Length: 102
Image (tube, rainbow, N blue to C red; front, side, top):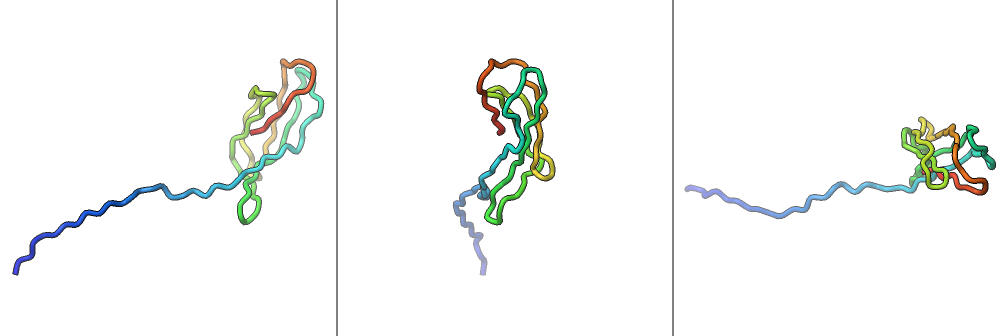
C-alpha cells in the first residue's frame, strides 16, 4: 500500500499580547505659591501607578515641568517614583501663572 502526501492549510490571526493599562497619578508635594523672576525655586512630587494591588511608585520615568505652556524642566523619577526640579523663570508677566507636571 502506498500513501499519498496530504496537506491542510488553516487561517490564523496574529495579535499582540494585550497590555494591561493602569492609571497613573502624579503629585506636586512642594511648590512655591509665589515665585520671583530669575530666582530659583523647587517643585517636587511623586509618580505612582494605581494597580488592583494598590498604588506603587514608578521609578526611572520621565517627568516634565511646564510654566504655563512652556517646558522649563525635564528629569526622571528616582527609585521611589519621586522627582525634584530646581528651576528659574526668566521671563513672565506679573500675575497668576500655572505650573504643570506631566
